Image (tube, rainbow, N blue to C red; front, side):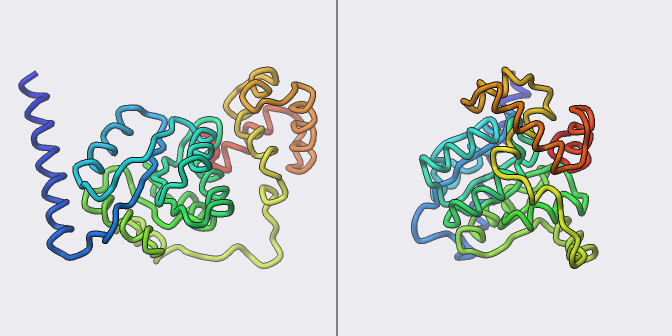
Length: 243
């Protein structure tokens, strides 16, 4: 217990130090920035919330444990910033970012991920994310990212910025991404199929009939050029929709 308390004290000191660094630099906002924290791991959510609550200018307006819940919470709360884990169940962080950027342009998305690979970073940027942080980033980077996003500016942790600088390239002209042909409901169904859910379970989660799920499954296979559920799962895994 003493060791755990010592670690918590050290963590609090690091957070407060980061907070003071921001304060004395003159970068603190004139008014509070509401933040919604979306991550499927409770311990991670609690850690992020503790960091934000240590800096009083970032009231946490809510939290979400899966992608569908994150979309619903943004619809309900309309936070200034959505702090979003890339690997989310039920609806991927990529799809959440795309949907929020389209439907709630005033809510800025800052993505959190363990992935540093170019494919993940570029997809989030193209989906409309204002920032991208590696999960082992310092607390001061998290606060900086939220401040930048709220002002409509982009922020990427140093390692991510390096990847973007070295590797950024546009999709080849005329090359269509099959994922772009899917509507919002088809993307939800694809995610849930890839997670191993049955038609009945998907119907319950999306409040639709099993027959409708089956129709979406058929349309998905046609649009993506695959022939069965296993191929759908492999396609989703290559796309990064599931781990």
